[in-house]
Amino acid sequence: MENDYRDGTDLILSIDISGTQTALGHSDECKIAYKAETKSRTTKEAAAGKWKENYVASLAVSITASGFVHSADESKAGLPKLEDLFMSAKPIKASWKYRDDTDDKTPHYHEGNFIISQLNQTGKAGDDEKYDLTLENSGAVTKGTASASTGA
Image 1 (cartoon, one colour):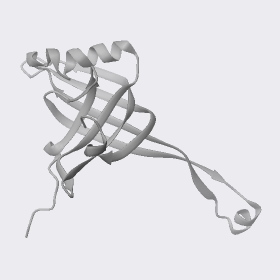
Image 2 (cartoon, one colour; image 1 turned 180 degrees about the vertical axis):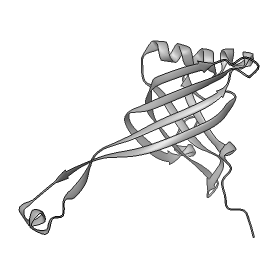
Image 3 (spheres, one colour; image 1 turned 180 degrees about the horizontal axis):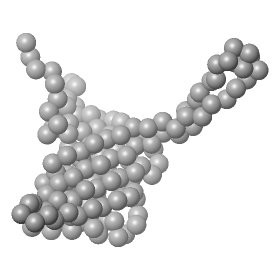
Image 4 (cartoon, one colour; image 1 turned 135 degrees about the vertical axis):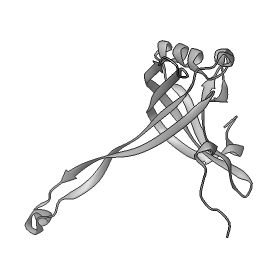
């Protein structure tokens, strides 16, 4: 029987560096969180039955990622570039997909504009230096195919 489980190593997060989607350098972890903010309303009919009705008020996506600080990242999507992007205080384009995720040989991806809401740098004695990154969506996040996108 074929192994149908996805390997977390294959989840690739890319960010826009000078107009080119570039995979996050020396990444070791990535988490994508989808959230729906709900609100409720109570109509006279619903109140009589004691049931409230919920609806989606807004959608959000947050991404947390971490990786190792490496000197080769000076020109790639590593800590030095992430610091520059954070300091610019502007939305950046981010996208993610699975390395070999194909349906009819076309990779699927998600993309949107994101704000870097947090960037941490950790250097423990006797351990590799790491960074942690948190992105929060700024506008719609879309799902498409790589053939319809440039560089995802």
